[in-house]
Amino acid sequence: MSEVRADYDGAWKEGVEQYFEAFLAFFFPEIQAEIDWERGYDFLDQELQQLMRESEIGKQFVDKLIKVWLKDGKETWLLIHLEIQSQVDPNFPKRMFSYHYRIFDRYNQEVVSLAILGDNQANWRPQEYSYGRWGCRLSLQFPIVKLLDYESRWSELEQSDSPFAVLVMAHLRTQATTQDLAGRLQWKLSLIKRMYELGYSRDKIQQIFRLLDRLMTLPPELDLNFQAELERFEAEQQMTYITSIERIGIAKATQKYIAQILTIRFKNVPTELVEKLNELYDIELLNQLLEKAVTTGSISEFGQQLSQEDTNT
Image 1 (cartoon, rainbow, N blue to C red):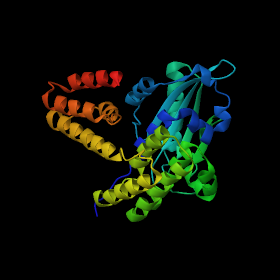
Image 2: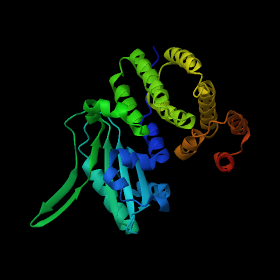
Image 3: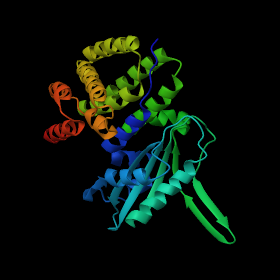
């Protein structure tokens, strides 16, 4: 059976971007309650990428830097670390501190660092970085969420209507079925059926499905079984919300072909370009970009075309 790799990073990054308020409400409700959501919020991707380029540590995990306004009128920056790895990393607290002080030093803004730990090591719970000597001491303490803890709170997840309840269940069952892909197929179907049972809207089901599909990856032979089972279920429910899944599959394949063509032609394809490409699911537009990938004179020219199309959609 073909090997598959779950896209933990991509699923969580997209989830936070798409459902940021719901993310805080689910994992850090006390923070969510103090933010003035009417003033909006900004993802500071360029500012964070600049720090990443300057850092000797390098980008080894998923980070989001978001500017929010508190109800008392104060501006605050949230640095969210998503540590999705399977082994203990003794350098993690130091990285938390390093990015925290870099942001504060560069932009002179109050920073709150939060961490989501998605590993499967129950005893690994870093929450502080500190050092001191001769009466001088420095310490950074930061809140963490350990996804593994939700195994004992499964009934809470099942009763929650938060998209992150579904994402946490998908994350944990993806980890648990690394050697049982047939079991993963059944869990994937089960989580999708649950969304219908809870009365999720068409848009919400489709959006969360995209996250599940990045996490709960299946080899081609099982993916065909999954699609057949899903089509049967949706026909019974008379709700063909996802069996646009076929179109999603075509779109994903076209995204892959475009990236492969660009890589063959230009060798180095920017990660940001691939990420933007992977957010497009309009098949007609992707076919136009596929033709452009074959004929474009440079990767920057293709990037400009992609940005223009992204703006128009």
